Amino acid sequence: MKRFSILAFFTSFLIAACGDSDVHVAEQPVVAEPAAPTVVKTPALVADDTQPEMVEESAAEEEELRATDRPIILAQEQPQAATRDWKYEEGRHFARMVPAQPTVGGADKIEVAEVFWYGCNHCYTFEEFINRWKEDIPANVRFVRIPATWNPLVQLHARLYYTEEVLVNNGKIADPATFRNAVFAEYHRRGNRLASVESIEELFGKHGVSSADFNSTWNSFEVSQKLRVAQDLARRYSISSVPTMVVNGKYRTGAAEAGGYPQLLEMIDELVERETIR
Image 1 (cartoon, rainbow, N blue to C red):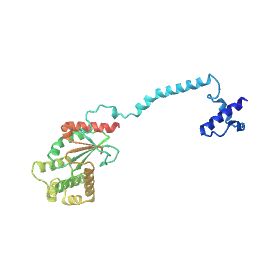
Image 2: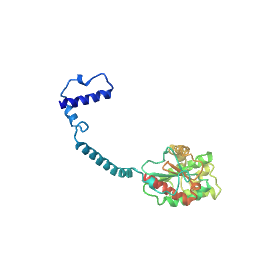
Image 3: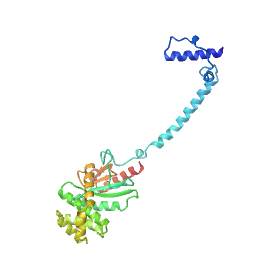
Image 4: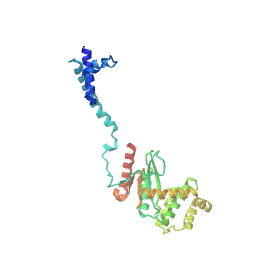
């Protein structure tokens, strides 16, 4: 009899929940369904003063455990970079490029790129600073140079740079640092603007590059492709002045924003650290 009353109560509860007020409990047959034992043992339907208390205690213990674990999970998920007190500020000392842009090399290293022009006085002055800095870069950092490509003369010097780069890689220029310094000196100290292919070829000849090696490299697909990449990156990075530093295709900055060349290199190190721990 007790079994019937419990089932009737449960059935009437379900019917009321579905909104069917025309169906009466008394008209439902008593069927020994498999779910009935579970219903009888449910704490909400059994008049047992101890079982509900056990359920409440278990729920309280579980909630306490969750509360204890929660701060640990959040601490693990919080980026380390967000907790650091950085010296240089986004929007003031450097600009973040959104979305991040491609780099010259792969994603295996953090890339630091210097966008420059041989005819730029500031690039000439910065050369001493950047050369010292790149001698001691971390193993996870790659330093590259990207020549500016604003106008015909600057593009001519960009092709000069990539011809130089290919000839260095092919072992045709014995001392790359000496040759690079010679290009800057030719423009800024000797007044040779290197405004023609002939004047550029003559400069290469002074450093042991044959006319055949120069011309085959100068007109090569490899150099032309490198030049196209430089033009594309200059557009993507929104380069408007040189020297400009770009870190990992994400951060763009210069000496004016940093407050000087030493500060600029210090900021580059900080941006590299941000990328390292992110």
